[in-house]
Length: 385
Image (cartoon, rainbow, N blue to C red; front, side):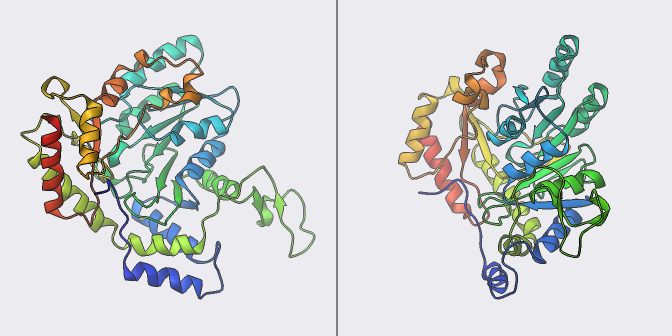
């Protein structure tokens, strides 16, 4: 089975992790801040806070922005459930904004219409999570302009997008957001095995994020409520979590960062090859927005249903039977039982529904051979007939 994604781990990566295993620090030691510094420098952000997953990063980002009961978080329905769950963890109510059919990202025009209605009804969101689906940035300048007009805070869920660019700047520079979040899961652009990162240009948010990842505890006397009892003293100033990244994971990530641009370049070349190979097939290939350089974590095609003999499910199953490990990213979050019980109606999100009825994720990862893409396309051609 050809997987849709696969990590690339080199001898240098193994050596970096082995060096930590032979050092004095296995948990959060000196390698974590080095990894944070590398990511912050690459993105052009002031601060980076490493955690044990992108889900954890999204959670503490919401907490740092003081999201809580009585507040609303809005996000895209075409995303992994964590983009919505992070708000639910904080006790906030969740709603969704339909997608742009070309980029699969949250649509700024749909967002503007929804904000106009919410403003009249007195239920504006406190936080909007803009997801960079497949590695291509959402329309952050437009969404940011709406955030200024309507007063909401903005998180970039850039789990798919480290190494990508928006308007000539690295995704994660936070020019148009309060916080951006990356994922380092094995199928992402770079990996720490499990891990995530929150980046920000706000000093106070960075301090909150760092404290929230580690039980809400500080050893900084300037942040304490009273004079320390002694050099051993620390204070828990709020309810935080054990979301720390270990030096083992950070060492792997730091080593992988040296190949980030090469990975993104290879993914882009593979996507270009898919674009050419798929021209004669009854599918829509991903739209490349001129403002963006996608990191191409995923390559998603949409079936032209009127030109395909078989159903979406049949095409998917035929590909799997042919040894092509296709996937579907993602089931609209509002369809999940946890959210469906809250009364979401799929008809409210026609573009997300259309996407779900057509989308198939094809295999794409740096180590895949060009000839394997030919096999994938041949199998897709046969499955559509």
